Image 1 (cartoon, one colour):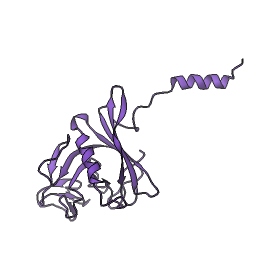
Image 2 (cartoon, rainbow, N blue to C red):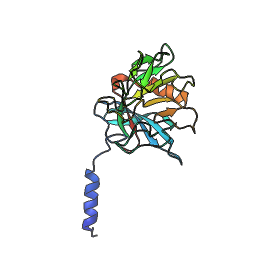
Image 3 (tube, one colour):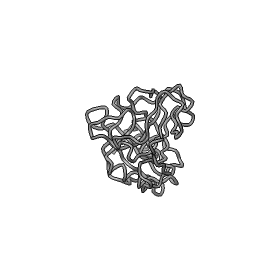
Image 4 (tube, rainbow, N blue to C red):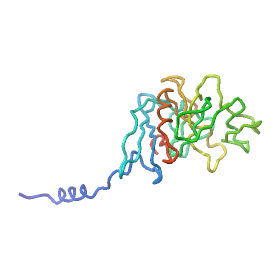
Length: 216
């Protein structure tokens, strides 16, 4: 029997192909947990969330797949997110702290309770841009962290544009409760409250968790 040289080369390459490094590219080596948020469905606002954790030398799913919604403009291209564009930034970002209205929350993340005095600055001209502040804000525009609609009843900070902060590149990007399966956000990732609580209960700051948004 004769074997074509091209076939021999293909077989050899198949044997030396690198193994997958994880559920998505760009995950830091010190991250033991990763949430992956990918586009799903027929419109730009629909997404699917999968949760992954390191086990031995590989990765394994940790929670069932969950439906989510993202910004009304879908995912921004990597590096293209801007304040007020209604898009969710693409990329890999650290997670935490968690936040909510309750005095305590079941989570392995650091937890910060939101009060009526807390706000997040979204004014690009403010020296407090993209920061959580509890004093009177030095800003023309900000978002209350204790909302009347309970979308921030529980949530977590996605550390996008936080270190360093670039004015105008986007602010207040969170995981939070959705207004419904067809209700887009202004740039955050939102899920059903039960799913979000399951995620927060699984996340552990000792595992340096990250979130992968879009297809970076």
